[in-house]
Image 1 (tube, helix red, strand yellow):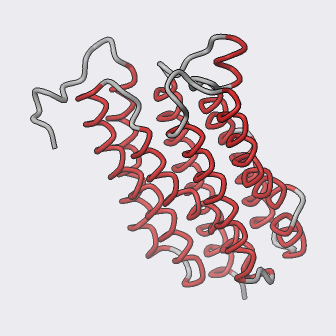
Image 2 (spheres, one colour; image 1 turned 180 degrees about the vertical axis):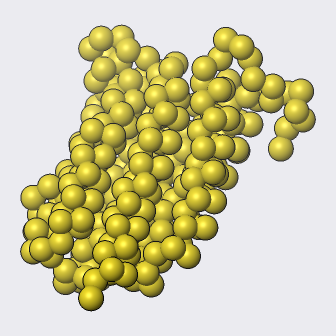
Length: 249
């Protein structure tokens, strides 16, 4: 960790500000989810544990990314992808846990995990191993490969196995929860490919001159919204389901 005088937040640096606030927000969310596990029924405890792990892992990485950014002023690409490679598959696990009681098999969980890891590894290769100055062909190739994993998760959540299981469950809470999480993937996750395409060699960088100088600001905001939001949706389903179970005859 760097000395406090080195990591003081500059007044005119919103990226540094969001590294600090994003990390603390996700740490606070983890504390909340871990403590709230005691209020839900046993079948929902694992879901809240996963939610707490997602935000907790992200909070630890944000403290390291904050220090790296403050020391170098550069995008902490490797640290960010390490964070995503751990947290995004866990976010996909939440789909399995939400639909487990409706008959979801363990194979569904592994397919979602593999698709998300595929998406992230290809994205990292496309971003971190791009030749100096940016190669459009390299960026597009690995961007397309990465998108295949994203499209699988998106399709599963909206029309595929996850969506069908939620529909078949007959539980309005599960159906609502899965649909909200699907919106997170469609809208909330959209910032990540946009950021990727702003890197040197990326389509938005090449076509419109958009650069990655401020991409960390949007990544930080999107990370906090997506990861905390995922957990809040799962918590809402868990607490309402638990209350319904307790008042049922």
